[in-house]
Every structure is written in C-alpha cells, then in structure tokens.
Image 1 (cartoon, rainbow over the protein chains, first blue to last red):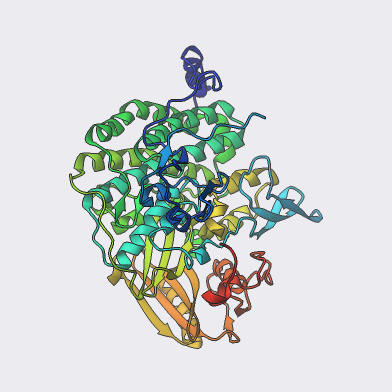
Image 2: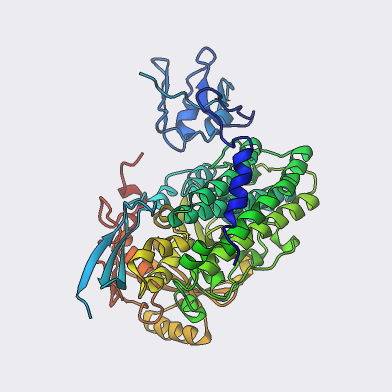
Amino acid sequence: MRILPMAKIVLKSLFRKAATQMYPLITKEYYPATRGKVLNDTEFCIYCGMCQRKCPAGAIEVIRAKRYWALDPKRCVTCNYCVEVCPKKCMTMDKRYTAPSTN
Amino acid sequence: MGERTVIPFGPQHPVLLEPLHLDLVIEDEKVVKAMPSWGFVHRGLEKLAEKRDFIEFPFVAERICGVCSHSHGMAYTQAIEALMSLEIPVRAKYLRTILAEFSRINSHLLWLGLLANALGFESLFMHCWKLREKILDIVEETTGGRVIFGACRVGGVNRDIDAPTLARMSRLFTGMEKGFREIDGVFRKDYTVQKRLQETGALSRADAHLLGAVGPVAKGSGIPCDMRRLGYSVYNELDFQAVVETEGDSYARTSVRIKEIFQSVGLIQQAIAKIPAGEVSMKITGLPPVGEHFEMVEQPRGEAVYYVKGNGTRFLERFRVRNSTFANIPALLKILEGCELSDVPMLILSIDPCISCAER
Amino acid sequence: MAKELIVFIDMEIPEMLTRVEALKLEGYRLMQIHCTRVESGYEINYTFALDLPSQNLRIHIDREQEIPSISGIFPAAFLYENEIHDLFGLNITDMLIDYHGRFYRTSVPAPFGQAKKDTGGGE
C-alpha cells in the first residue's frame, strides 16, 4: 500500500495555474455553436405562430392580431427548434446565456 | 438482538442527491430490510409522446435525464428509424457513437466525483470534475450544449463536426489519459477508498442475474451485460470487449466504471480514425407506420429498453422507456440487506441511481 | 436491435405463467414488463433475455380482469407490476411488495389507462 497517493496530484495542482476562473471579473468565451438564448427580431417577424406550434416546451406565445410575440425564459429549453422552423429566419440563437437579474 | 426501528432515508439527504426515499428497517446498526418509495419526479413523459410530433419528440426524450441525455436521444431516434425502416448516413452514425462515448466519460467522471465527495475526499472530487470540464467544453463546442447535447434528430445528427475538430477531439485524450491514470491510481491505492468500498455491498452473480441487474452493477458481478455488443449504430465496426469484474462489491463497480473510461477513449479514437465523409442527415418523408419496435442501448448507467408503437399518424401510439436505474433497484434492495447504516448512502451511490430516468 | 431478434408470442394467462417458470429454469433474466392500451383492452408484454436475443410473451386482457403477478418467479417484477397498476389501473394480484396504488402519486388516477381524447390539459 502506498502512502497518500493523492498527495502528488494535490501538490502539483498547488503550484499550477488555477483551473477555475474568477467568474464575475473574467467571463467565459462562448463557442459559436453554444445554445444560449433565443432572440427574435420582431421587425421582420410575420407572427405566423410556427414557433409557438413547434415549441416542445410550449414556451412561446404569439398573438397575430395584436402583433405580440413573447418567450417565457423559464419554460424555454433552448433546443433551437424554433430557430430551425422559422419561415422568415428572423429568430436567432444567441450564444450568450441569459444574464442574471440584478435587482 | 436489538429492537427493530424504521428509519426514513431521503428524498432529501446531504450525501445522496437523488430523490429516492427508502424506509430502512434497522436492528442495532444493521439494515434488515429496505423498502423504496417512489414517484417524486414522475412527469408522465411517456404519455407526452402521444401529443407531440414524432419529429419533435427527440427534444423531450433528451430531457428525460441530464447526464445520459445523449443516449436517450440516440435510442429514441434509432427506435423511430428502425420502425420506419430508414437507413441513415453512416457518418451520422459515427458522430452519434463518438458523442455517446463522450457522454459515457462525462457520466463516469461525474459519478467518480460524487463518490469521492460522498467519501469525504474533496480533493479527488475536484480533480475528477476538473477533468470532466474538458470533456464538457469540447462537447459544447461541437454540439452547442454542455449537458443536453441536442445532437440527435430523426434521420441523422443536427450538426456536422469538421475534420480538424475531430482530430482535436482525438488528440484531447493524449493529454487527458495521464489525468485519468492519476485518478485511477488514487481510487486503486488510497487506503480510505479501499476501506469504504471493498467488501461492502457484495452482489453475487446469481443474484445479479435473478434480479435483472444491468450495466456496471451486472458487470461488477461478472455478467458481461453490455448492449453495445448488439452492434447498434456502428459498434459492430469497432473493437471492444465488455468490461467485467468478478468481486461484485462496490469496489468492483467503481473499477468497472474507471475501466470503461479508458475503453471509451479507445472507442472514440477508433471511431474518429474510421469516420467516412458524407451527409450527416437525411430528409424524412412519411409517418411512422403501424408497427412496433424494441430498441436496446447501453447507456452510461446500463442497458435501456425503448419500445415504440406507431399507428400511422404523426403521434406515437405508445412510447416506453425502461431505464437502467429502474432495473437496478431490486439489486439495490438486495445489496442493502445486512449492511451497516453508515454505508447506506455509499451503497445507493454505487449503483449510480438516476431517479428522473427511472420515473420519466 | 435487429428486428429479427425480437420475437412476440401471444398467449393466455395460465400458459404465460408456465412459460415464465420454464424460462426461469432455462436461465433467462427479466428485461422488462410493459403495458399498452389497445382497442379491445390492454396488452402486457413480458420481455426476457438470455444473453442478447430476447423473447416477448404477450397477453391480452380486459380492464376488469385479474392478472396474477410473476414476482414470485422473478422478484424484480414487483416494480413493473406496481407501475402498471398505478398508471393503467389494472388489477394485479399477489405482488411481492404491493404499494396499493402509492407507487406513483399521480394527480389523476390511472392516467395512462385512458384513451387519448379523454386526457385534457397538460398543454
């Protein structure tokens, strides 16, 4: 039996650069593919309601008559399906996650 | 002989993160009998398949569970493709397999970390999760999701991975294998780990077979129960052997998972070397016909059985998932009989329970 | 799994019980049990596996019919049978551990047992 097999790893880690980042000061670089949050450019939106019908989580609400489009961020599972089916391609997947609320 | 007492254990417990409740009948410090109680995270996802388009349902199937998410998506899409007799592009199959093995490494590193945490071995826990972070980063870069990959779609995969990235994925392990070997050494040689895991929770081969144990629980008891041997996706073109240990204790189950990490590294490197060029998805025409199909896949936690029944419409008639944890619960109850009360969280952890998979 | 490896065998309840006992002696393990709603009632699938190819025994039953439990033969069956009892409302007798409908605590009794059009809400 060896004594303290973990000690070597711990000592090595002690003298290396930290594996974590000081989060609020240094934010992580997101990858281009990252599914962060759904955005809709309502200027080009035709309010067809396709995204509402296709959303697996039922997170999008569209009222055509009132030209109303809303996404419930708590229900959204960021699956990217609404972006795929959008006929006008006015919806995009932003690579940044929703920022935490500060108030 | 002491008096018998019933101690409720879970669903909220400092060590065990899973919402599983057990009523432990104890005598002095020994557990005589354990009785599971269930249903804290039942969401009725099987029923939801009757209301969701079969093309959209992979998004729901992937969210059955967080860690084996990719294998759920893979199993669901494979089941639908088999039902509809679709032959998907070979490159898509390879990409699915590569990601499935990444998710297996992710799951096992997560579990090893949780095990170390339950042992009170914080530095080992941090080290396991440090390694896991690299896996998650490369997966996020290639699929867009860290935990829920969202890679599978009916008829292929959502996103192709280009050749330089694949080469980088393969090279990633030349640096990481040293890290895996280091944690392997700690789990093998550390006194605390050995004392807590060896000879606790022994499950004989006969019991494991009778109780229908699957995955690392069965493999730790000497049963080579590995659904990848069925050769689904491209596993028939890759060279591997089911990892088997014979002791049947918690230590054997840990050992199986560590060896599976190395096996997955090998499988990923083989698959990346063999991957052909070509399309990654195909257009789906038609609807699932009247018929039924069973699909079995090896998830990180063991075998999962998918059953789909089509009725000729966009909605499935019946969708059924039998997950590995569900099959391992009877084995867990057997393991718990006669153990010390202080070992209970350790033993529950040793089957790698995932209750949200099991209850759907 | 290749389609030809999956065999479905339709049978009656007494025949099923003798067959299950025979399968146990042959060394099969219980893979899963599941229930499906069909037009004439329900069907229950028992899947057994010996190494890799599997066997499916299938019985057709009505809602009122009593189904004998196989948990005396394969102890692991009690989980599946309680699940069928709670989600489909079928009557399974002599289970090894009987939860009496408290396995899944669903807001609607037997939610999976109803036809598709009956289940409102959820959307």
